Image 1: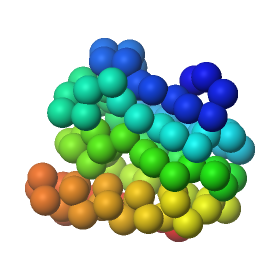
Image 2 (image 1 turned 180 degrees about the vertical axis):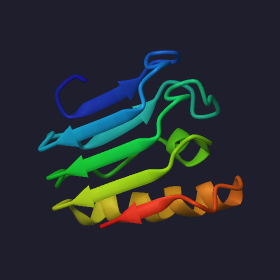
Image 3 (image 1 turned 120 degrees about the vertical axis):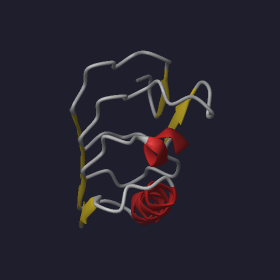
Length: 102
């Protein structure tokens, strides 16, 4: 993560199950290859707390088949909008059991 931008690199978190971001000043969260699913292959929980300025989240989050829960607290509208897009993508790819806690 550098400044206000976090660009994911392929294969960077092969065993990560829980990702918690708290009070990060990220504005852009992107991936190097938007078509790759190799960023968080084991991620089960995504927790975002106090992320106010985030405008963009990586599209790969919508395709993580292991994702069970997304928890959002005290975040800006950009995060909430991105979470809705992720939820729709998860449903499209067959993950009907994803829990969104806002």
